[in-house]
Every structure is written in C-alpha cells, then in structure tokens.
Amino acid sequence: MISGIPSYKIILKSVLIGLAISFSSCEEVIEPDLSTAPPLVVIEGNISDQPEVHTVKVSQTIAFDQPNTFKGIKGARVTVYSSNNQTFAFNASTDGIYRSQRFRGIPGVRYTLEVVTGGKTYKASSVMPAAVRIDSVAFKELSFFGNSSIYPAVYYKDPPGIQNQYRFIVRLNGVLKADQVNEDRFSDGNPTSDIITLDDGVERGDKVDLEVQCIDRNVFKYYFAVSQVDGNGGPPVAPSNPESNIDNGALGIFSANTRAAYTITLK
Image 1 (cartoon, rainbow, N blue to C red):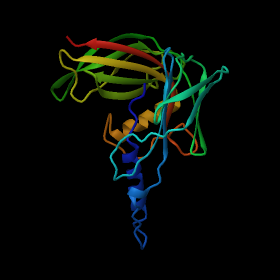
Image 2 (cartoon, rainbow, N blue to C red):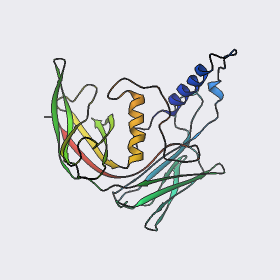
Image 3 (spheres, rainbow, N blue to C red):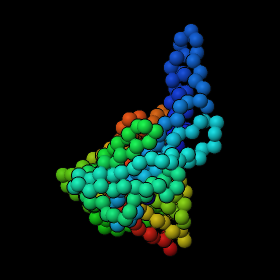
Image 4 (cartoon, rainbow, N blue to C red):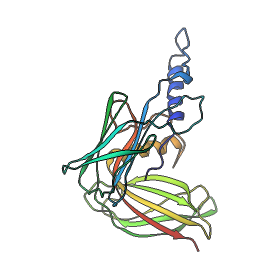
C-alpha cells in the first residue's frame, strides 16, 4: 500500500520558479518554460512484513500545463533483491504498476529495488525495522483556543536504545485524511501517545482506519520533508523535492516497513 506521495508537478514548478528568481539580479531575467521541462522518472515502492502482493509504481512527471494525472511507464524491468539472498520479480499489471507474487518481508533484512527503464538503471535500498507493539488505539479530545476536537491516538512503549521512526496513515470514512511521521528523539524508551491531527477532527459515528508503519531513517526524512512542504504541523516551508533514496536522478521513495492496521469508530 502506498499513499501520501507528493505532487511532483507542483514541487518541480516551485523549484524552477525559484531558479528564475535567483537570476533576477542579472541584466537579463531568465524565465524557464515550465511546459517544456524534461520529464523525470518517479518510482514509488513498498515492501511490508505482511504476506501480501507488493507494488512498485513507475511513472514520469508531466508538463505543468497538462492535467495532474498518473503517467505510468510501461515496459520497465522491476526487481527486488534481499540481503538474505532472495530475488523477487515484479510483473506489469497495468501501465506503470508492477506487482510481485505474494511474500512476507522480514525485519532486519535489507531490500534493494532495481528498476530498469529508458536505458537507465535506478536503485534504492531500505532496511525493514523491527515492529513496535501497539498497546491500544483510541480517541483523545484536545482543546485549542476554546474549541475542542477529537482525534485518533496511538499508545505504545518505544523500545529503549533504538532509533525508531513511525508513519501514521488515517482514513476517515474511507477518505485519506492524514499521513504523518514521528520519531523517538524525545521519547526513547518511554510510554508514548501519538495524536494524529485531522483538519476537522472526528465526529460521532465516524469510522477511522489507521495504518501504523515502522520505517527506516531515510524514509522518515522523506515523508517529514513532504509534511513540511504541505505545511503539516506549521506554516509551509519553501518547496523543494524531498530527498529520495532512489539514485540516478529519480524522484520518489522505496520503503521496507512493518505494517499494522486498526479500525475504530467514535460512538
């Protein structure tokens, strides 16, 4: 399952505009033609610790004057190699969508993604962390400036002496509402409650589907950068492409992570 991928169309546009501004002190102002910027390869892949079919998406960025739709790349060769000497071939299901046979990822194993397309090879690696046991998922009421809202909260004990990173994906009544990450820099080894903030909170009768992932450091840094661009948790920062763990100039992210799913309804 993959979600929360940023709009590369919007981010790339902001970067190019920034380049134009940086040259504004020269005698001749350079205005890049955003509609003719060369497309870049975008790779989004995920391996989980669940016995399931895993997916890798291979696409390319689109011109800024075109509809913001998924432009899949067909004919790519997609393979995942593991540090315990396993090889997993991904086959095309539709243009740009590549799926594996059913298998379960193993914590502690390094998974390396290799995508060959357009005469170039792109690689990325991710080590699957150990799963952290979730004690409970509940609702918590918070007040801001006299207004109260109810939010989902995840309760767990962070393992001591280990750098841990978490990703929380929330769907409210089937609609994606939050995708946020956290780390244990200030909570290492302590009982922890992470509250997932939603724009309008949760109301009675709402069903919350929550996915909790334990992710490696590079994946955390990527999604944290995405949240900063989006303004989650504060004002947006100057847009830039999040640092990818995929080499050779591709955008996107490859993650090997544990995954647990929970469903709760506010009564």
